[in-house]
Length: 442
Image 1: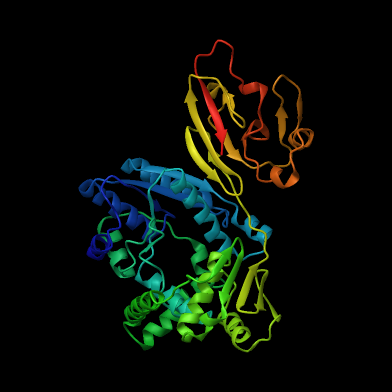
Image 2 (image 1 turned 180 degrees about the vertical axis):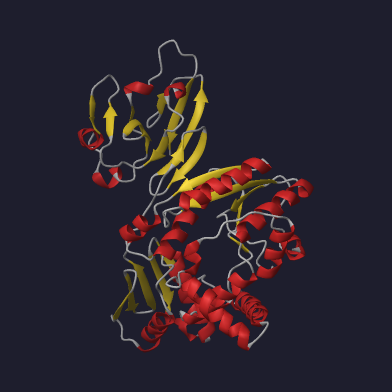
């Protein structure tokens, strides 16, 4: 397991004082990582927090949650448990169980990071997982980026300390330290892509070519280095970005293919297109730029259209951008996309400017959050009288395009504050109050 410490040191994954959330399923890998980092935290002085997510895929999935929480209680490790109905989410979004589970996990992790509960998330992927990922990406038709596999650190907050550690070393560590773990029976279900590669393909490859996993991982590292170098040659300076539109000058398509492909990929990412675009689509865009007539149009997956327009190739993401908001009520400032900045602060002076509101923070429940309006919301007007939020906003002549991005402070379906508009009678400041909380927007 010395590879874990080397990886942490080489990539500076953990700093003293940080709170590291460990994604803990209860399996051998995550339990090994949780135990290892907990022991290491006594030396480097950081805090380890276990994060367990019940995906509700199995009937007995709640048993895993109890197992993890009991282990953490004995070791005095702080732990958080979350429950997400992944099958229902997959059905609603019309996506696969694997993709739905990944989205659910990232949603939980991102929320914990944004709220400051943890600084980073440690994921227990090992060298065998890396080899599986590279093979799956190759089978799906990836380029050099996908062949690079998983990053040791992503977005500065997702870390993989065990990515260079073998599965055998992990199991030996678990046995030596008598670390309990649970087996997930879905790991034997080969209808899942990763299980198919893990249980059927990789064993055959290793039987024919011993040491294949190490060689696949080494190949991934070479691809990663090469990809980084090529990416450094890509410049987007002359590309015009406007909301969900990218206009690429025709001259950019005269560069070598490796550069042109990355220019297109990066342009798509900047306008919110991150999946379902394949190499064949990139080639179609290149062909349109080089050989297409002015005015010609392409239609691609994910509601993407591409237009040849005189000196530019214009890529348009026509899919409506989904903006979410789930912000706890506390002092400070935060930005709301397409709306502005909301600032919450305690004040002694009760004078108000346009768009400013005063509330008694003591009357606001701890579970109150800033969000957007939902069906069933109600609002108790200042001065009395309860109405449906939608009706109240119509009465106030708030345009529908603004109503959809108007932040509200809510507890369940009860609205306490409408940003920049009004407060509920229930959170008003009493006449004898000496301090209050001011809510302003800009």
